[in-house]
Amino acid sequence: MRVEDGQARVRMMPRHEHSNMRNDVHGGALLGFMDVALFAAARGLGVLQAGGAVTLDLSAQFIGGARIGEPLEARVELLRETKRMLFMRGLIVQDGQPTIASFTGTLRKSSPPPEPV
Image (cartoon, rainbow, N blue to C red; front, side, top):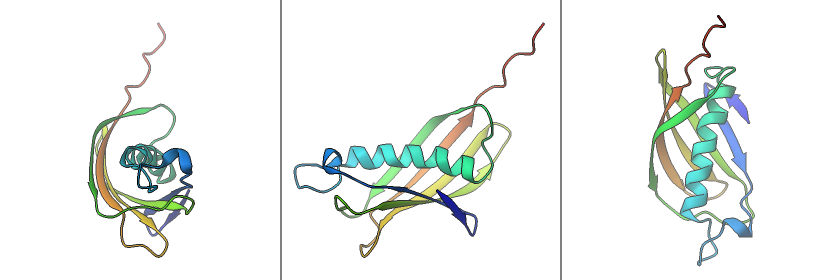
């Protein structure tokens, strides 16, 4: 993962286990990658520190097929941060291909642990 121009870039290498019946990357594998990319990007952008978060929503638009055996890249940006929420969006791309998918997601930061008594 790297950050460039306020955008986090997260990569994965799709393998045969990620394929559908057409031997493209399965949509479910892409959705899983999108979810993981939101968390990696939040950490890389410095808006999610120690502690966790949960995905409140993830919306995806599939635009084209992705090939097995060639790296996929999620380009993720932070739209807004509030005290407890992160609003993010991204694109999934693959070299030499049109955009594979676009997505938006909302993460809710975990509550801080209670103070010891």
